[in-house]
Image 1: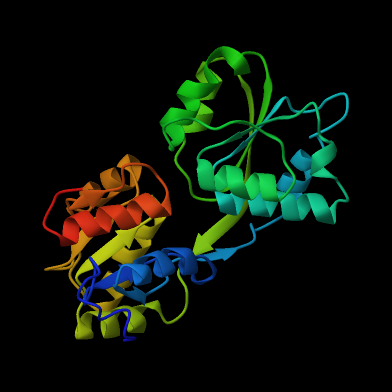
Image 2: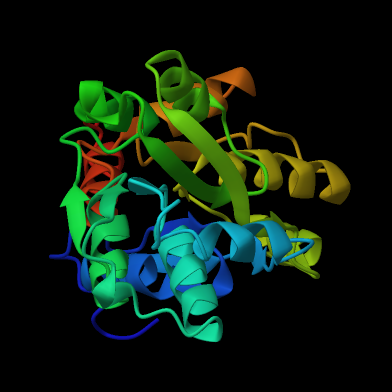
Length: 270
């Protein structure tokens, strides 16, 4: 560890915290933990890959403009925003020119990624999860053509609720997540040294870590390790696996997740 990490004045000094995000996304969370003295232990349990076929996504993207255009585009994660923007670029579609398209982002990180890609974000719900987005959209989607781009394995809360509310839904896979190679060995080594807390940023991270633990012959929940969740949906998934979260972020963003880790490690329930 560096001198900063062992500074006893920092709230997470000497704590080892498991980071389960995809390798290319772990940096921001790990950096936030490091700043407070923790040693982030990166064991990626998600690897982001393209969908099995780009054809459904590309066909939908071509309808973001024109006479049969979509009225709304719903982006459920920063990964989705990046994936859709990348395919728009391949198809030579300038997202900044889609002036009649309303864009809903499920949270601040998603909105940031969407704006960075050039989308004009119309709506970000106060509650950063699917239910919050559905509530925020309200009657604005009645009889409207709505494109929902998401991960291959995702909950059906948004399409079911908006369909019942009268939206004309099209759902396409923008990407998929798989278990990375080597995750089992990385987890076994992390637990051999010891981990104080594990962070979870999605339901997929819970399910995939459970699978990695099973393959590694490790108990799940992991004894002596505090689970800290980014939000109520992820917490619910943890409970499905019998792991009661020791803390939950006050809002679904990485800064609040780090705050929740601090509260847990200080013995205060987050």
